[in-house]
Image: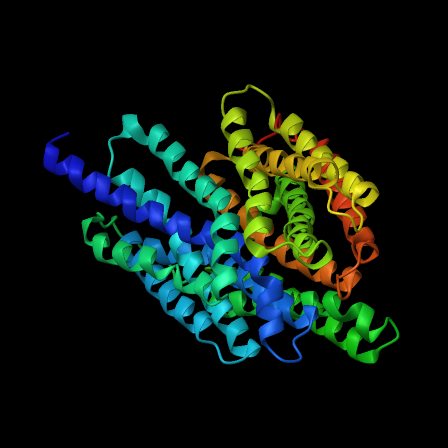
Length: 453
């Protein structure tokens, strides 16, 4: 590789790494800023605030797979740059949002930007390097996001102490130089492909939004509330319409044919349940440090950073083992089960980080680092080669859906989330979701012998 080509490749790595950093940072800093954002808007409740997190996950989930098809039509470079622009504009919208509803809308727009960036980023990175270096580049791409996730709580805690709006403005010093340097990206060949079904994606957004709303407000409205059941009915109708469109549209938002493979279906459901528990851990753990123990955001961020740091180490170690996807996912689920039980028994009003909090954080961090690899590998291994990309996209979509539902579940069972007893049911649910994920893993190897060609 010539020196000029090498320099271009380095710039490409920086640009693609920036996209990975943005999405990973956003996940952790917003959870840590949850109380500060809520308290700055008069009358904002935890139910309302949960949408600041869920709007991002739902939009990301709905447009993740269609974005790959848009990249086929218009080119990965063009779609990646569009994602960067949308993410930057949405970050400004979040930072200067005058009320919580506009903040939620801007967060949804950020989810769209992330959905456009992430599926296209790896393909652009690989296009800039020879095939013999692809494995190395995949490792660097994954490590970039993991390191950003580990630093996110620390950076987020420091910024929240100054002004929570800075957690959104910090995206711009990363996004804008990346946008300028994106001129070095090599455009990928376009292919003849139908435009993805946007109406189907909107039906998925509507269905998930109504489902999460029903879950979030169930405890406040009560199970006898007609409003609650109308919301659930609307969710069922929108999701049924989404499935129907996926089955009849020539270019569906999601290709549901992969669900004809039972092993893949199990892995997708297992990933969703796993990330329901993950979302409870992420939001609940952050709130416990700041709302129950009343830790300063800086210290809470530094203390919470151990979790994603453990995930980085676990994911690197998993890459060097020969463990089957089934064993990986069982291990990950059981780690979450153990963490949920540990926190439900050990956490109280007294700040006991080393004995009561830290073990659960390490267990969930290790589980997160192990689980994603296991579910993706276990699910896609049952698919024919030409469906690997589709399968990976759908499993990652289920991850975002699970996270959005998990936030709704936490808010529903924790209420004001200011006393230790408010979290007890949440920790047990986190353990339960981990158990379901582990049990689903028992079925992962079934169907591999009968994998379609």
